[in-house]
Image (cartoon, rainbow, N blue to C red; front, side, top):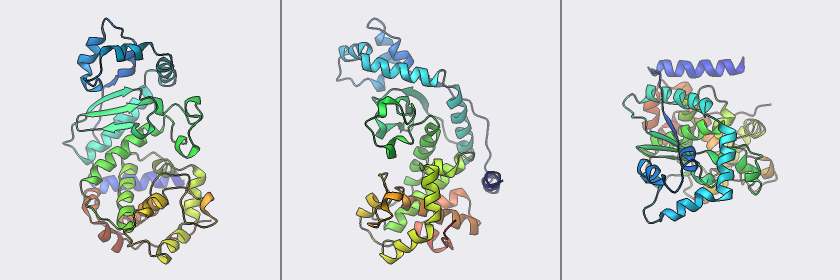
Length: 315
């Protein structure tokens, strides 16, 4: 029942915002297949079709060596074994773009390309005006041997289901960044992150909120249970209107945990500021007649002052 109500609220939000969701079909180019099935004789054709992936300062021998490299081939084989024809993920991507075009009907879907990235988890998804690159070797499952040297707070999102979430977040970042200005206070920063999470959740209405923010179920439950105490801590320490950038690493950035400098730290998830910002935005949208486009344009302080946000502890 709880999941049904969440889905109903999101559906009504889209309806009230007059968002239409056209059917979308996309083509996804599997660069890793094309590259690793090539050889020294036909590599030039691959370079012609994907010139932007071949920096001109590198000689062909670099790419030929890569084709023959044991580790690179192991990466490719693991990706191929895990994803197959990529049809499941393609359906999710098409659904996302259907929702996104409901928000921006003039948007031109970029060229979609999968590839391997030497497990460059900082660039799992790269979005430009004309390209969306998906590094599949970053989504092989959190317990995969390739990630054995990584901390669990990183790898708990290295799963297939996070591909579409990371894509939605890249779009949310791009959309919200267009309205941002410099020198934000802490409250303004977390509300902008709240906007991004709210946007991503509307683009992916069937995804659980815990997955959208990147929490485990236990992390999300902890955040809900301690929401009132978290908010009180922010107020008592005068964090809300502080411009101290150290608060970013303590409460906004991905990390092993949030840093209150209290005994609860090791139990807390990181990014707790984003969680609070999201709650403020959701409170604002609950009491406001604003639509998604208006929300994106609103100044963070306008959202905060009109949100009627009242945190409570959940048991």
